[in-house]
Length: 358
Image (cartoon, rainbow, N blue to C red; front, top):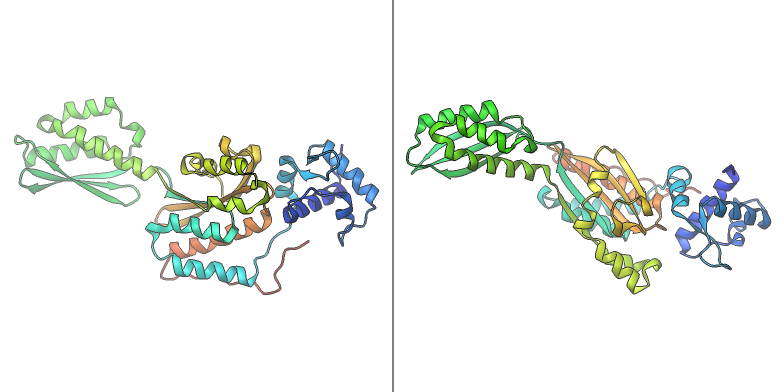
């Protein structure tokens, strides 16, 4: 059965009405729309066809239709109109960012709260360094009193160090030889390449300083793992209770209990090779806890080799156009704020006449 332009128009109308009312949509409601010029009988036939094709569902025998996951997917991919933020919306986002986003190290938690407030949905925020860091150079510096400082310079230009106690039989010459050995064998390696075999080979070549090698390798691998991991925050889980889908306490509790960092930890991986905004509708979600929800995410750079992701979790009946517009605006604004703080300027608000197109 062909998905004609008329069927697409009817489907878009059903989704828009269901988003705004949270009630099953009947043919009468669609015929009353200003731009709908078809008869009630025609609309009923098109809705029946869309149900047969899997884009609509009928929750009860006598009820109207609601969109299915496939219907939402087609809506997001092809049918939804662009949403232009109003001047009040852009101003409120700009003020929130300017007032509350003062320090990068607290960005993740604060952004999650801001996004949740702006969308009235549970929000997630994530930041991590781009790509896998490796060691660029090792330095071993005598610190006196039977100890030395291990300095590890990483490929992302970060420098970390650790004070390590020296065995009595190791001197400055031994440290210099060990430093040369480390730089010859353990630089430009991923954390997965720090194997037991490598440790054994380096220890056999380290001479009197062999006992220091396990300590150095442990600190180095721990440092690289921290570089590869990201920071995640979740905020606003209880906002789901504002939506009619979750008036049932048991259903709400089940979904809210699944909205934690562990359940959402796979979402950044979904955005690994993505740019811009991605929408996961219902069963498309990677986590079992999210199978009855939709997730909208967008990824952006924040400078200094860091990238970030923001997203929201909500009912499949969410206003995708509005949520996507707000997340995109957040991403654009935050990217500018953190890339060059001294020169950052937030995007100009759109005019008062901005609106959601029909």
